[in-house]
Image 1: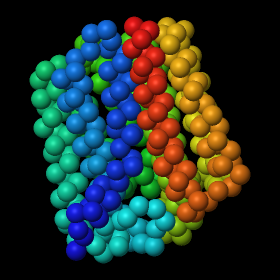
Image 2: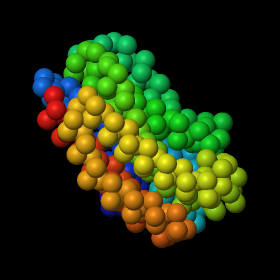
Image 3: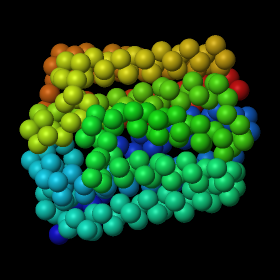
Image 4: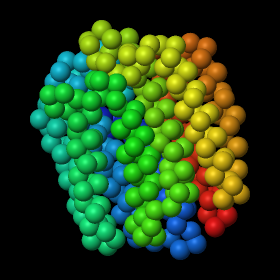
Length: 288
């Protein structure tokens, strides 16, 4: 059976920047009057959802047999290290944590957030779970952009400000784009195996070359939109310091890196998102 270290690996901690980044940006948008208590609650919800979806994917892919002989992070069910029911229950436990803290946050801000939270949990499970998972239909990137970009940033901002602004909407797009880039890189790495087992991710649907171009577009597009928000918050231009890393990653991917060579690039993409979010947040807060 899996030990504690393997369970931690199964949670895929290197994906957690995707949960932290939108909370940073949403909180920075609330300056000069952020609500740190609500920001902390939002962070717990975001992290619990991210970890929950990681375990849910491990369970669902594992029982379908699409997660064996994978390149990348440890799969608990696919490798036989943990029973499927234990991984499923862990996923449900994480979703329960997200629900509990989400209810507290809703009570402190708006009860409408209960509906949004329910949709987020349903989307987290439905990505690879159920009879017709949308992650197997090439729709995973859309969900990630919406829930870990738009919803997460706007939600974090709303619970601290009680409003939604056009600037906040625009600021959510770069975070969603970088979160998508992480998933695109993940699916590019797994494309050959997914094609073999009939898992139709977007990378499988559009092909290798188009996936690499999509990755480039997400990095450059996210950076550009972030820079354009400098029209309202001038110090947002600080994000230009992340451009060399974006260019370096894009060049390596366009050159044709594949398989295990994509693992460090995937890790660096997650670091890029967190770095961008941090610098972006500093710029937004200073400009406020």
